[in-house]
Image 1 (cartoon, rainbow, N blue to C red):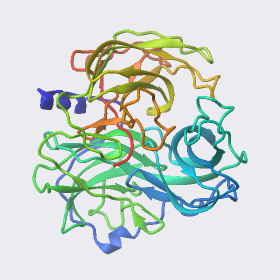
Image 2 (image 1 turned 45 degrees about the vertical axis):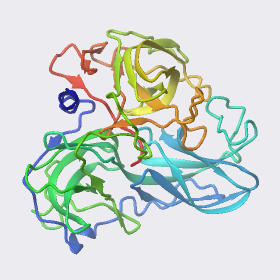
Image 3 (image 1 turned 180 degrees about the horizontal axis):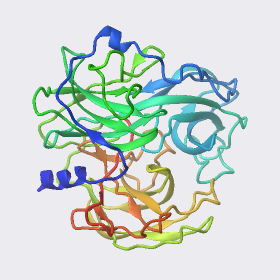
Image 4 (image 1 turned 90 degrees about the vertical axis):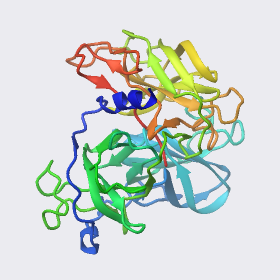
Length: 432
């Protein structure tokens, strides 16, 4: 039953990401790995002299801040890009007074964007708790300026391949390209097993079908460019075409273990003891006001199965992936029915509208205190990942431009539109 449910999820559509599979192709060689750097001539964009950060590959869910100089204690917050300016927060870390070198900050791979903005904030309210988005008068930006940088990111988790298919939690690339899964060759990427075409930006729930032959216990997801015949994967077939992405000398790839059973874990890779399969089933035919700035409403979840006590965090949509939080409700361990989440724009963005699609997402209560502290306390209340995918279901709550209005869930927890052939699947978030 569990495998059948997961396969139904995999075979549905969340975002229009074309998927392609092919026979295994030759393993990459050293000359194939030498590709132009993504964004290599951009350097630093908007720059706060107190924050030094460069363009980078993100493979373990962490961005690296080269240097921070702060006049006092506080936070560095990583903001997603919103029309060239800092938007919602996707990562936060405390900082000490003075200089800090090589600070690692965990970011949310579902909410992040190819361009990010690092900003210093004070810590002037509850010590050690980042409160700016819930209370814009607290923990305000220290200088009002920020440093912008670009990333290419792979957010992958160990998982059981289901019918020769794997799912990548999130893949972030400024220019689009290919997410390619290589077999292992003595601890390095080997032959190609399968690939999926990527859109520019943040790609949630990237599903990659694999060749039936040649799979290894360790797999290597890798970003490749799409630079010859656009939309046709030609790496290993046309000299120099569709080569791996490299930024600052680092190839955008990381190992991922193929397991014998489905995995359940937190977004930082911490394994969870699971008796049940985590599930979110939103109520059918919900219609909210998605036209009024600052609008409010309620999202009803018919059924939530949680692994331990946790929370449902309903995110706004941003170009097909989750963004700012619209509301949070606690859930108990096991099955919860009739869960209602009040929705409102975050206080730091009072004029935000409820988007026509929202993303209810399951988080664990890692501090066991009933207080939702994700992106407020470092490492707290992380999203729950089931077999490579974050437990979240994109849910239509208003009329999309030029389209039909409501999506409705079926018994398997999918979202069905008026077209029974079009389904939506769980999406995925940070780190791995």
